[in-house]
Image 1 (tube, helix red, strand yellow):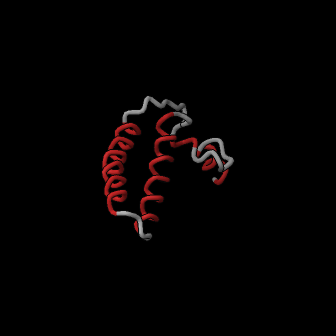
Image 2 (cartoon, rainbow, N blue to C red):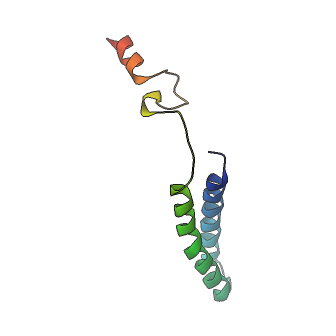
Length: 81
């Protein structure tokens, strides 16, 4: 998922962390309110972008996780029986 949607998720996450950190400092309230209003628009935009993303994959739930070295769940169950 190396496309615009994942980059937007990373940017939004970093933005929220920076905003939360700045709330703990003595930053001017106008800057915080401006950042809050941007975040108020950024989070729904990110959600909409992720949900409407045209990402396709040939993986299914049978493929399990890519970091776990099994081919499919059915084959793993056959080995255990």
